[in-house]
Image (cartoon, rainbow, N blue to C red):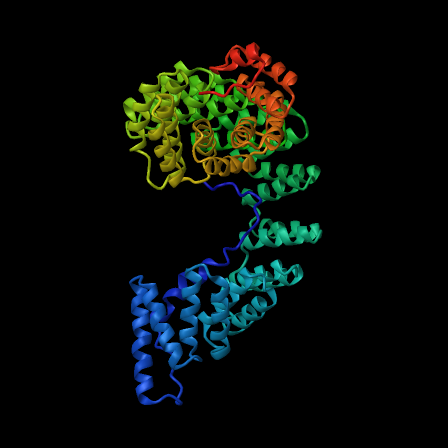
Length: 587
């Protein structure tokens, strides 16, 4: 069964060719002849060190390769082979501008070498030096007129330079070599569309229909392209011709459903999809794909997705033992914010595939943070079958932390962090950030600070760690300059986050920069008021403190009172501040 063709931009991977060919090409060729101006001894040294360079490159010793090449340059700076290899060297090191310069010089000294020209042309294209790229590709095409790939490169260079007619003309020449080709036609379709030459654009697809009149896929493709262009009448006519070929083709049915959806005829769209799902010609994966496409279309057009639920029910009756359906239906229900129903579908998937962590992960998203107890249960069930999956330890530890079961949470996170892949530095930092918080809550301040440092060694920009570490340093009145620097990074990353603004304001307060602290604490009040959680007692109290220090004692007392009214303050001095109408620092 063929796969449906979608209208996609035919992008050419311009730069892969040079690395697949140029870096190894020279091992298959002799070094360029050394000019006669060199003595016999110099020729001998040149040949020796050049081949040493190639050998060093072949075993990955690039520094040694460079040293040998540099020595060769000292003997003969005009040798194109050496210049080309130096271009490769700097390209591999991502010093591509230097690489481009060496490729340019290599071509200047040997303008006939295919690999030198190819490397120079593709690198010129990357640096948007389109004129040079086009010149090189044209030369290569002239010397290798049967090489189809070169025409693609040249066409892409013209396109990037904005010369679309020449890009099309180049593809026309390519078509003469390889014959009628879907990708070429789609690329030309795109170029003609940009030029607003729609008749020529659609004629490119019509050529395939003319050549293969009984191939339904080209009829469907043309209809889809008409539909995407807003030409609904033309699309319907093409789909009608396709129906004459095979009215039960599942992809035609899917396209017709999309057509009716765009015509706001929901009943007809659903009827087409029901027909597709009932088709004996389609396997379940194809049906899932059609449903996924339909859901995507509804989302893209911002239309209600609940109409698809009945279609899923129909499909699940047909295939009751197909877990993939449960997963996809769960995802659809999540889009509709039906978390409990989605969780049931994910649970069916997880129970059918208990060692596949994905089902359990999806269940987590339906439970956290709304129900800590349910999240804990899901994690524990998942770990029975997936003992080495760190994400379940993380959520389990976080939930126990939120329930203030600090000792248990710490043990869980310590156990889970060993399973994190060393390359996943962000997740490791998140683990250690939580562990640091737990040490602090268990009054192990020094251990907490050590662990925070470890977290930041993995991810220096971890906002949560930077915020908590800086705040706890300010409370301990330690390393305030460091605390201020870390906290400033969090505000820069998220300038409207009330928590980060409060921390930064408080660090500044502890440093004695009261006027500046007031600005940030005022913003913390402002953005807290706009959030769902509202303003915390801590933010109220901090703002009251800074008001007192900026000679507004009456207003300070007002905000201390607001902190008291919140009822969740953990401050040891708030009552005394209100009683004495004076700022009293925490001990």
